[in-house]
Image (cartoon, rainbow, N blue to C red; front, side, top):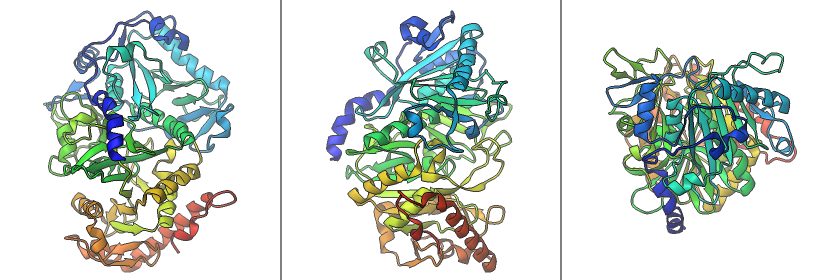
Length: 558
């Protein structure tokens, strides 16, 4: 099966990781069909699918940032250094309204409100914009299910961002015959002053019209809105084809065995860090699909947090920050040296780079069916062990729970880590009800006999503010033991509250770290924290019980 997958994906792989086209192609609003989007009065130049060298020239000439001494370009995203999830809307209309999981994650807006927001963006490009950058590319390395996506931006660094993050066409023929399946118009300079009377959250808007295959962004410059916007749409389209979309990173063995691992987790839990393993081949760091052939990447690049980044702790990512990488909201000294430890701007400093900056990336952007499924959590309570083995029922319970901590700066308004539950380790990107994805994942794990583990990259020896963050060394040791199978040689004991199996010993990791209660000086405080967290799990899970859904609540804490 793996060889079939590799052959099937090989032609795309050559496109996926090549540099952008060596020159841009002349275009007009009419030739690209942008006039059909309403942008029919724009008279300025259109810069389409620029090469990296051309992007650099535009970023410099536009004075959009500075060059760091490591030769990467550094930009700032304004007052928003993370996503604005409370400002995300879908048009409430048929047939999509019957499919969407409405609520705090997916908020409805009327067609009239969307048209008003969209009109503001279009009017800005027609009347005020003097530059337009258009990127045409792909989301999804599998030719059978990939989507053609188009991004219209006014800033060169935003064009740089999507060039890094999405799969880049390589041939002139691909560009000339390109018809997008979905278009995002980024009007970051436009704010919505009518949000109160429209019943919206703020002047920021990230609005989707599924039936018209377009979305519009305004009021925020944060590039991640474009990336996650398309991921949300993939999460809408693919389940209807029986394909599992996943907020996870993935890598595979370098020995040709087809040994593939998945790493689920929210931002800041270690997906990018742990999948960038020098001993293995990186498939991708954030968004993947699982179909009948195996695993495939949605993207053509990586998007990593830079907080406390060093060559010693994360050598692959550190080395990837070089020419053509794009740094966001990081601190520079007066000599333009990057200081990753200075987080006075934000703890959510980021770098995007094409995946070929990782020397050991997987050229086909794909892998076989996974031999390990790892759920990453950053436990702010310091209760969970660094690694535990899950039964199939527990795997579905923890997948639906999606417990972690929101890391400071990842989202607007989050100033320090905060315990949270995010269904499927990515609720913010799920247009459908979480049980739709759980049903798909359960079937995949069962069909391919994939074991599941829970790995805590959060705190040990106490809660946040008292204990310490798990060391990357210990976390990597846990991951290595899972991937090479040596964890199965350990003696396990069931956690008395959560029920999962915890190893008593594992290589050089301290037994006190493996058994978290032992790491706490105040055992009574640990017991209280564990009881509190267990109750939080129970309270949260009530939304996933009831008629018409599989009830996994018996696999949670007691």
